[in-house]
Image (cartoon, rainbow, N blue to C red):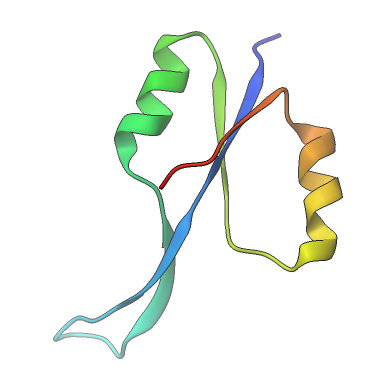
Length: 67
């Protein structure tokens, strides 16, 4: 089983001429590609309430604090 590596996301309000602005979570693709190339399974972690942190930590074998 591949190690699961969490990657912290950023948040931004996406503005588009066709749609009303809406919030997105994102991380530069290079982080997830590097995890995959190293044999891991990347898991993007959105900005979440503090109480969710313990649940995420139980899922992960490692964590990248991008930014």
